[in-house]
Structure formats: structure tokens, C-alpha cells
Image (cartoon, rainbow, N blue to C red):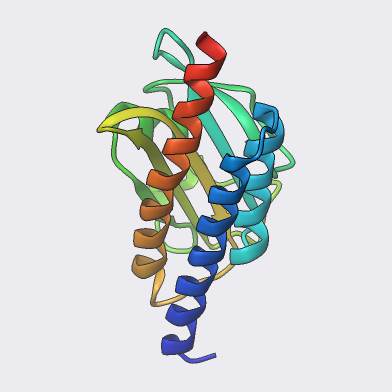
Length: 172
């Protein structure tokens, strides 16, 4: 597949996921089913090995895994701890790790996913406030990983709208 086709496929997959998020947001589904539909859609459309969504608890100090396609789903991460989600939540910025080249990030390699080439962690922000993050493992190594990363950051804002509605509804 050429790089131009890859970018077009990323754009089309992103559109399909955005459509799925919008559709899921209009249906009265329980929180877990809604988020599971989102992670499943991301995994299928992009061919990711795993997609996990973490949302901050009321204290803002811990992130709870609300939906996951990974085999090793960790239920809670502390903000700032030595985990990819903990670091992203503390820094409030995205991270992309090339697992084949970035040996400084060996700590963030998932031993249950030996085929993973790239790992993305993207904060979920609603009106500039971080409310969670998603963690993605990809088997694909590409020169267009920066494009994919930008699409994932854009998707995070759509997912933030859904997640913010869920956190508001659960606190009422």
C-alpha cells in the first residue's frame, strides 16, 4: 500500500469512527456499553492491537479504566506514576512511542503484545481540562505515524464530548 493510500485510509477510518461516536452518543446506552463500542470501533477501523480508555475519578488523582480491548486491562492508574497513562495525565500532552526504536521507553512495552510497533497515549480533554486518556497499541510501523497521531488527537476531542457527558451523568 502506498503512503498516500495509507493517509487516505487513515482519514476514512477516522471519519467512520467519528460517525460511530456520534451515533453511539445519540443512543441511550449504559456508560460501559458506549465506551466499549468506541474502543471496539477504534480497534477494528485502524487495526490496532488494543485500545483502552481511562477516565479521571472525582479527585483527579486516579484514572479508572472504563473500556478496554487489551488482554491486560489495568483498572486504575495514578496520575504521574511510571505508566504511560500516568505520565500523559500528568503532562497533559500526548505521547507516541516507537517501540522498535525508542529504547528509553522499554518500561512501556506490553509483554502480552509482542507484535506492537507503536504505542500512542492521548489525553482526553474537554474545554482544555483533562478528563482522561486513551492508550493504543498498533502493529503498524509507518512513515505516516505523525499523521495517524494527529488524527488520534482529533478523535480524542470527539471522545471527550461523549466522556464528559458520561461523567456529568454519573455525578448527578
